[in-house]
Image (cartoon, rainbow, N blue to C red; front, side, top):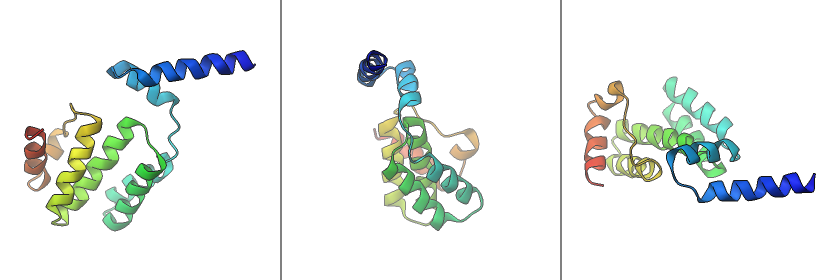
Length: 128
């Protein structure tokens, strides 16, 4: 039993040092995503138009810990909330955070075409 735990710990540590896309995906599977429930709640609230509560839950999810893909989703939705609330600086900051986690991140076509955050995202991504 102890040997299995030790082997798992060593394998996880080795995966933590890998930064390729497939290795990040495997590493994310093993990472504890304590913030996943708060993320799900925040995304539901976003979809329902409850942006103030959504922002609180998305930030809470980030504070609790998320896998990289979930971090990107949380940062992106926080950026959307800031953008539509006329907080352009915070919008840009959240997009920068998302791009720091996933530099190849792009918006879905419907998101990219949004008249408020589409141009801001393109400007932030071009400025990297």
